[in-house]
Image (cartoon, rainbow, N blue to C red; front, side, top):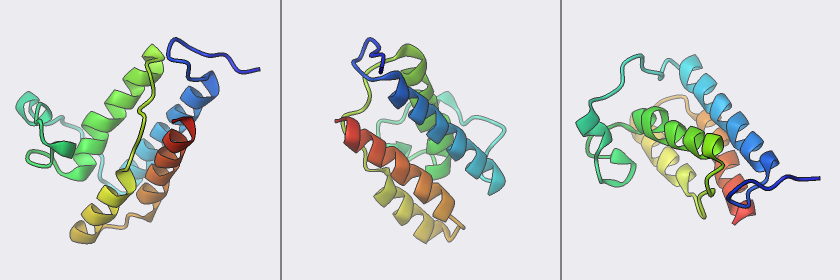
Length: 118
């Protein structure tokens, strides 16, 4: 039996999201991409998609994306209706030349979960 929260999302969906976020955090740490200090409030307040004008993609993942998804999980807020993180990640990591397959795999899991719940 699946419990539906306030948003109509099941606890299983929130649990899957939590697992994905934990995996992403671990991967960022393992690759040395996790930052100990947050960017300025001004940088985080950017209106550009992915805060591309003030943050790099991994900073956006850490300080914007993961925090937003944690809030959604804790609040049982509605899940996003679409997600397309993988193309952005693939583009960023081509330019950044980082070892990124783990991050891209995790973001693909997120995109797939959101696609299934829409």
